[in-house]
Amino acid sequence: MLLILIRTLILYLGVVIVMRVMGKQEIGQLQPYELVIALMIADLAAIPMSNTGVPLANGLVPIFGLLIAQVFISYAALKNIKFRTIVCGAPSILVKNGQLVESELRRIRYNIHDLLEQLRVKNIANIADVEFAILETGGKLSVIPKSQKRPLIPEDLQISTKYEGIPTTLIIDGQIMSNNLRMIKLDENWLERELAKFGIDSHQKVLFASLDTNGKLFWQLKSD
Image 1 (spheres, rainbow, N blue to C red):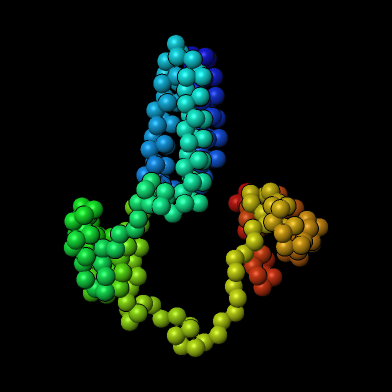
Image 2 (cartoon, rainbow, N blue to C red):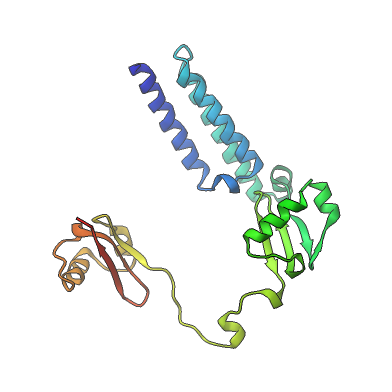
């Protein structure tokens, strides 16, 4: 049992390293060749994990071989558009100017019921309201509503808005995010002084804290 546990941990670490090097894409965003490689890696790891008679190298070597293949294909697809089209395919326009593109639907065998479902998920009930619906190479549907059906934005009313940006996380579960502090040119002493203004004598008592682009500090203490 101990041997199986050790082999499992080794293979687990190997697969985690490989998946980290491959990138951060979600399963639904994987290109076809990336999905194939992910499935093959899972199968290769399962064989030596369950069968102690199979050397670990028989699983690890092919796994890292697939990693090299994936990196090579990704780099080639990045540099060569034609090669990318071959391995990844091309986006398909399913709706154009409120009309179904029947020939494209038949070519890729995409069901109209599925298309309507995906439009409803994006809060679009009427195909006539769609300027373009594009099936991306990763399998997701991108929908561009007609200009008359898009939500109203400040620019439409010629209203100027201030820059918002995103808040910078400073503390998570009592741990200071030092890199984030350095990024905004602040330090831990500043943070401790700011917390002290609210009667907080230690950052370890803070569950979460962030600083927005207007300099406002948000914080929440741990429940205990």
